[in-house]
Amino acid sequence: VQLVESGGGLVQPGGSLRLSCAASRFTFSSYAMNWYRQAPGKERELVAGISSSGGSTNYAASVKGRFTISRDDAKNTVYLQMNSLKPEDTAVYYCNARNFFDVNYWGTGTRVTVSS
View 1 (spheres, helix red, strand yellow):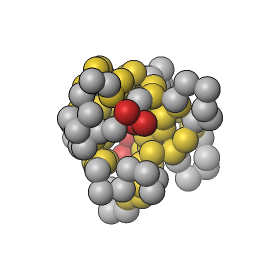
View 2 (spheres, one colour; view 1 turned 30 degrees about the horizontal axis):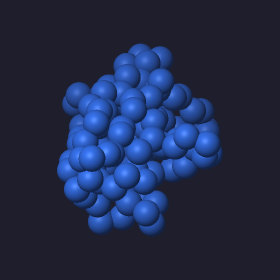
View 3 (spheres, rainbow, N blue to C red; view 1 turned 90 degrees about the vertical axis):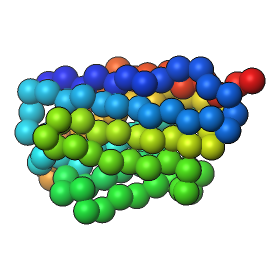
């Protein structure tokens, strides 16, 4: 099983980034996909999730209206479009896959830094 995040980097406040998570070696379409983040000195938190069908999404209150999660099952990839970024969005962002039986897979993370 492999989840590989990409797209992180340094961006100015108000800017945008798109994170990608490429999945392999499991049945991607059977898994809900989530993005978590962990800021320095803080616990990991759920940022956004999308159901296995793609028909349902959910967001943390802090990112609602600014972030959009989507998935492309043909590419086994989940995305997180992040707009209007704020310094408090600075964190390591992790991709997570979870199925009906609560089997979880994690990526190794991609760092996002929002700073002028």
